Amino acid sequence: MHPKQNRGSVGIVVPQTLRFDAPLTLQCQRTLPFFELVIETYGTLNADKSNAILVCHALSGSHHAAGYHSATDKKPGWWDVFIGPGKPMDTDKFFVVCLNNIGSCYGSTGPTSTNPDTGKPYGADFPLVTVKDWVKTQAMLADRLGVDVWHAVVGGSMGGMQALQWSIDYPTRLKRCVVIASTPKLSAQNIAFNEVARQSILSDPDFCAGRYLEYGKTPKRGLILARMVGHITYLTDEAMRVKFGRDLKTGQLNFNFDVEFEVESYLRYQGERFSERFDANTYLLMTKALDYFDPAQPFLAQARTPTDNDDGSDTHTAEQRALTQALSGTQCRFFIVSFTTDWRFTPARSQEIVDALLASHKAVSYLNVDAPYGHDSFLFDIPLYRRALANFLTN
Image (cartoon, rainbow, N blue to C red; front, side, top):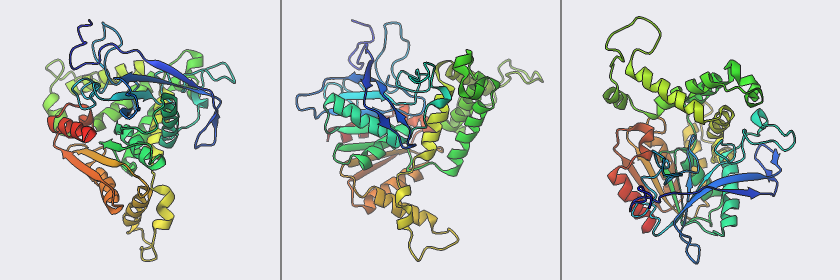
């Protein structure tokens, strides 16, 4: 037995690649002639296929949510703390599915895949995708697996957006929806952070108009800067103070522009690692999908009333009415989780979802968790968070 195949681990897992030959028309009105999804599954699907849970990944996530790919792996999947025997997504009870979304760079069809029309990597020619597109492919995956109704669809951050979109687009195909550290749409500030990250990549001389793979190059500097910007927003000032303070790497000021502070060293290290495993075109696509997400937008015009002020002061009220209308057709139970120190997607954004669900008379539970880890809190094994998620999934 693999040493990591203990009571709390799913052990060694093997990804699967599923091909879908039906043409896929995306929201941007472009069509993929076929596509592939890489998935991992944990646990066993029961006879009536009623115990399946779909896990949706965040921006830089993948299908590898739990377990290990080999005996030499040093780290398990990105949500291993919550998936496995005896964990909230208990694989003794549930059949857990995690996939890599199209447009990503971990095996599913994306910018690094071969374009059948050219025989070269798609690169910049890969179409822009949306959260709605991802959910559409996930429904096709459910059909392939024979899962008519998910026991739950669960996601954190960008994954929470997918879970929320599932409840709107396929209301009869999930019993529970878990939206963690997420938002009904990005704020202007969040779109601004994404734009800075994209410009870091687009302005890299090695970006080559998105065709860097054809030239054997990588816009590494741009990716490093994009990751550094993003990483700062996932943490809190207090967490960075505790971890780094103003500690100097060499213990003294060197009066140059090399790494001097420990926090600089950490950010450069994180950026370097990210640039070695992630694709630049994928980063551009993923951040655009985040920017575009707004399930309430189609209802905004009709949500405005004659009493709304022309100066825009009632915009938030109209937006909340539109979100209420967007969620009015949902039929599942909801569990919304936020974290006190998350300033990227603040608790107020989760409360907007809760308020809209309550206004639509939906069954919703809400938990705001006191945690010091900022936006990244959804990845941590926090006792209250763990117990609440386990209870929601089993009751």
